[in-house]
Image (cartoon, rainbow, N blue to C red; front, side, top):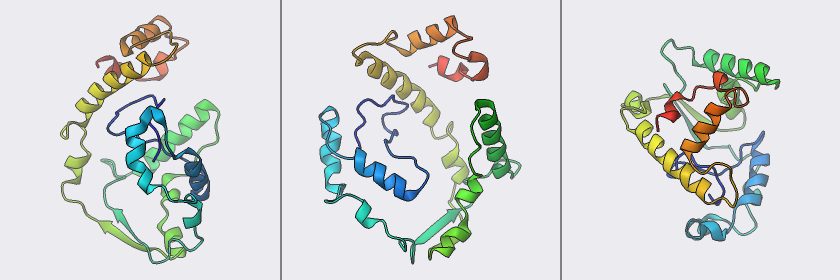
Length: 198
């Protein structure tokens, strides 16, 4: 629905340009603004155009839109080994928020609160099982890590080479710049070793 032109890539096969907003209504407003044809990504835009309705998406935003909708909650998607995924996520977000001076976001559990879905008429099916979920989520077994590393380097190099001006033109030059300016780039605060290997 949206152009990839100008997006700093991680994986061209997986990157998606989309709104991330406070509310669904906000997301729909932003989506209406960013969908449409872009000559810099013409092939994808032509293919996606059939999914862009006349009059935009706001016409489908209804206060009772969840009524009767079936929503499945899959077991294991948010688990960690000790079973404390929520606490892990919330503590990590809180620490990051304090460090960067931001107000902490609400816990993910609240965002996915099933009672809220029920309240608005959704049929919530909990405790769904996906066979081999652990294998599917293992980025090493599935080859996702290897693919991401390769695609990230190729995609970023292509992106940088297409800029009208940039002091760096490749991932290697970015890494060299960061290593030459470790304090300004806060290298101690970020784990970059895995990306330096690509």
